[in-house]
Length: 373
Image 1 (cartoon, rainbow, N blue to C red):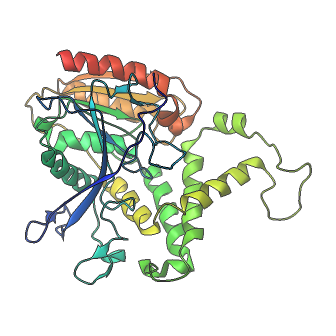
Image 2 (image 1 turned 135 degrees about the horizontal axis):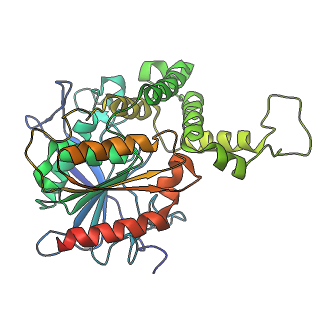
Image 3 (image 1 turned 120 degrees about the vertical axis):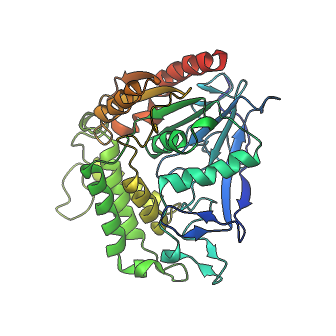
């Protein structure tokens, strides 16, 4: 197995020129829209081996391989590549940055063609359904009528479920990982605290900070620190940090005495260098609006020929295993072929990015059966 798939390049697809703008769930229209995306492997002649990888809140299109001159590979590089869980010798893997994002796709930091200035809060509120609707335009552009699978963790899992709700005939299988049918009040609460941290930063300026020297990096860093606490588990934090001090003694100042404090500050400081504060607001709001409970995932009594592999992690308290079990119960009631796997891990929600060996084993077997069946 190679370490990674080598040098890759981000591509861009633009659609939705007036009057063919994307109609959003809010009733607003958005266009033109650019999606940043990457592909790995080769599409077969029948265009039947395509897998769409869907990223989480802070992710982007760069899921695997190396960008020219970069040292760090894509965010799911351990899972995507020759011989890996998503084997690029067999499958054509696609990953695109979501609308509302800030990593190449159209979002609040993009230029509004009507004003010539960044959208800021003039960018319309989006939903997970809107994100998936935009992705469908990309898949159509690539000439793919039916995806072999859609796979993603956390918010990526929401998008995977939304693909079934929005375009059930365009998907053969679904792999939602560490996700839910809807946000719980606790999950909404964590997102709202993060948003309030951003909006409380004086440099936020009601979202109009793009032409200003000061950016709302302090508020966004705090939001990211809050997020990282929820991504880990009590046990993983104990194992990684315990109560270890950065120096031998307490400073008796409000500085980062403990290693865990230094880690959170580092995570916050690095995040603000690559992410836009307004995108954080828009994407977390889209996650909070997401709700495919009741009969919204599988419409009516018509049986769909779609297979599911639902993966959860024991120590994940942000998206606890019971939420994945609810997905499976919902599917079983509807007569859908669904397999549930709960992985023993101490990593918390981050496990979907870290427990790659276990995920790869499950996904390889599942995709092999799907391809044959």
